Length: 138
Image (cartoon, rainbow, N blue to C red; front, side):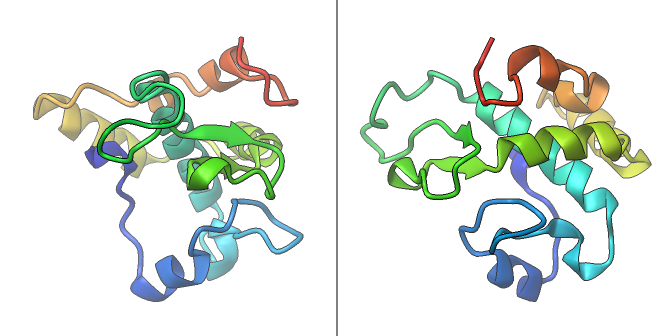
């Protein structure tokens, strides 16, 4: 899915590993390489992934080992490595960092190629309509 790919330097990708996103407590901050808008971009990618694949693999994953992404506030809640967060921080970043021109261009291009759209780029407010700050899905 091209919506979940984000260009990055290999060191940044290696440094993040499987860490939750966040700005403290051992979490990975996508702005640590000096580009603060990456926080909002990362949040919208996580929201897209968690909704685009919600319920597609059933509980416990599918036969190919994939399971839907769940967003959580608890970095220790790994649920077989199919959990990411920190949801509270992702919601804050989504609100604080507006959609970038690059996100819009990528969304428009992928739409012309038949991939649909990332609705969180078009409507960032959807995130707060789906999740509350405690991680409860509406």
